[in-house]
Image (tube, rainbow, N blue to C red; front, side):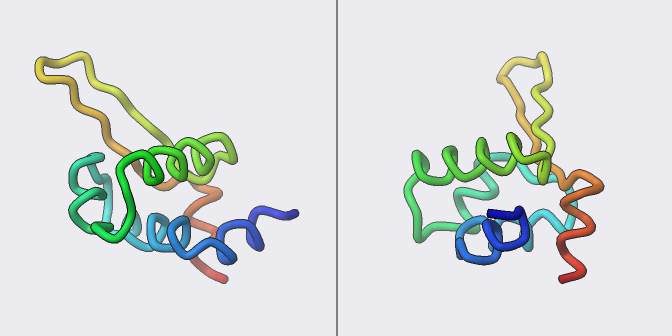
Length: 81
C-alpha cells in the first residue's frame, strides 16, 4: 500500500498530518486536539507516521522531557493531495 493511501484511509493519521500543518506540536497538544482517541492509539499512529518518514519526532534533553512532532518534507508534500 502506498503512503498516500495509508494516510488518507486512516482518519487519525490524516488528522495528525492536518494538525501538524500549523507547526510543531507536543504530544500533549495532540492529545488535547485529538480527544476522540486514546493516548496509546495516538502514540501508535505517531510511531507509524515517523517510521514512514511523514513526521519527525524530536526529543529535547530537558527536565521535564519535551518531545515535538513536525512534518517532514515528505509529509509537507502529502498535504498537496
